[in-house]
Image (cartoon, rainbow, N blue to C red; front, side, top):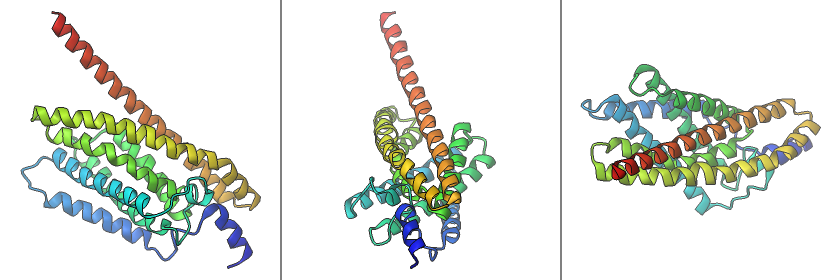
Length: 261
């Protein structure tokens, strides 16, 4: 390994490896998600089917990140392990498989939203496109790849969100999953997600400085793009949080009016 490669690894890391068939993994994941959709009973609506597949994806994503936290040593302060692709031998090399699986899911879900109006959701389409661009940039450039893996744990809130929709005709279950959704949304997408966001942006100045000093303009520009996309996803989560709070307050207000009348 040349001295230049060693210097670049200090901020970029050395995973995902060039030996990993990234595009093949994404295609396989997309096909698997499509097959799962097709296997589900035809009596179920596309809307319900999409929520079931989404729940499976969310569960696998969260388990993958939680397993990583328990199995390997985490270091959010190390630039190449939070803003780079990670370091081989630390466990970071397995991140690519979870990220490729999620990429395939997002592609499948986008196709589904364009085909079926009942599944279509404008904010979800924007979210998927932004995430896809960010993830693909990370997979092929290494910039932000580790972050993308850690952010998969935010899918925790997707599980009760889908379940409350699936069981919308069962009031008791719907209510339980609604409460779990609100709690998990603020825990995973705002609290946990903000921790990852903090450490990523804490490392950003040093990453950009090292890339600039190394004359790595490509990585410098990709890091800037990733930062903008990351901020957009944070703003989208805040927007969703405001919608949730608005719905909670409006529901409480209407219940108080009913009691008073």
